[in-house]
Length: 332
Image 1 (tube, rainbow, N blue to C red):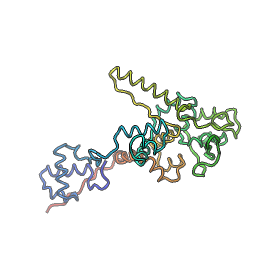
Image 2 (image 1 turned 90 degrees about the vertical axis):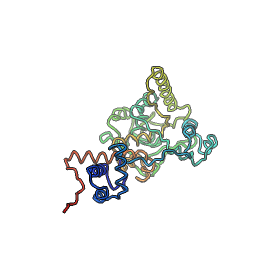
Image 3 (image 1 turned 30 degrees about the vertical axis):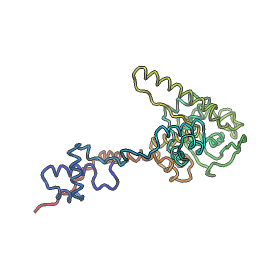
Image 4 (image 1 turned 90 degrees about the horizontal axis):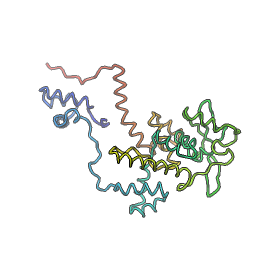
């Protein structure tokens, strides 16, 4: 990827190098290409040292970061947060770091599941339909468990998010969604059959998930059905990793420890990786603004941005546009 303020693309740098190696003075070529002599000499030196690979931009990331938080500390922070559900100050005391560092590490540690990991987790849980639904729609727990049969549009494959069931103490209170606005969220076609089965035998005002009368309660983070499903998956992966190591093979990728709310992050990740733009993801998640979505999932959109230049290059080539080269001044 070329830095946004670079005067030359990789192709332009190669043209510069070839003209100089063809016998023309560096100062003349540099003036034609609109760069300084120092810049031309730098690209020439990089080409001589590494060939065409040397003409690509180098990462601006520092080689070392002596003040960065140790990997072991960062892992301990994430583990205490996901397993013990401790607060920021308690984690800071336990890990010997500042509360502000803890907040930063937690914000960066959003776990994303793959399609296969979602399927594995759902198959291991007591409520596979709900797990899959959360991972592919991005609804909050209270929004999903407050859905009623009348909120389902099976023809358009959309759900209307109008209510939010929040548990305060031991009592569930039903109100409006977090942003106090209703929204329409699509669900993929492969969920249509399971949603239709959930609606069978229920009236229009019955709840979609559960027995239709009582809202499902958020499972206990330590010994609830969701935590049990996560443990089963992680235990199976631990055994598979041990067997692979015994055979001398590479260990398979492991699923990160997740909570029901983390499935919301997974939904955003899967949507963005499938090509959804920021406005679509904002509407799906019910964020107040697109800037909030960008701030929350900046790491995902950065990956998306890395592919923009490549996609534009492929599109231009497929359109059959001729390569444009800098014009060489006529000599008298």
